[in-house]
Length: 296
Image (cartoon, rainbow, N blue to C red; front, side):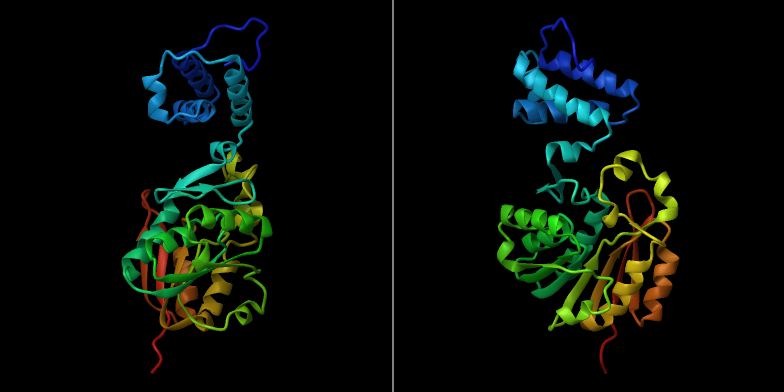
């Protein structure tokens, strides 16, 4: 699709969708049709399905200009979620911007597992590296008796998370703290033990940086993606969790696709028991649940 033209044609919803999707496909975008639908629905303030109900609706020059601006941003590689300013996670819509990672379907596995383990029970949960707040806020919505603490090193990320908490009406049950989980005194900021510690930490080693898709590598926050080895947070959180968790409390991690063996060794080294690993939709081991030893 040409993003500028000296002679404008009359565009309808269906003609603009087809032309823009074809152009994106030629440029190698695998999500060409979906991208075109999402961008045009956003401009026209319609649901995606309504685009086809209104397939012959004319697109005004103002709407076309707005669409072209969003289209240019996608052509540059910017993720659709940042362009639209939101992403869906566990059926809930979350504000996202370049200060936070875009929530992934794989991370929903963490939430599902915690809900399965604690459904109907009150408890205290610590979310380390909360980003947009997707994990903590979803748990607050679905476990209404739970009190949560959500921490992140990035103040701008916490501002997004706080807005998301207010959006979903759970801000009174989540305490947001700006803390660095790698600092030696991290544990000292908490006076009461938690029933759950959960983290989707930065876990991509810098050696893999160039293999990460460009729309992730060039737009999402590196502080939430990369570490020197990929294991710094697993090691530190596993060590701290022995003090952060009550006796018998549970630790949950999202895992790098090939981190399973080393994280298992780390957890066992720090005395965790009853390790349970779970695969994602692509067959990779993506989460682990481990239990803190029960005091005698």
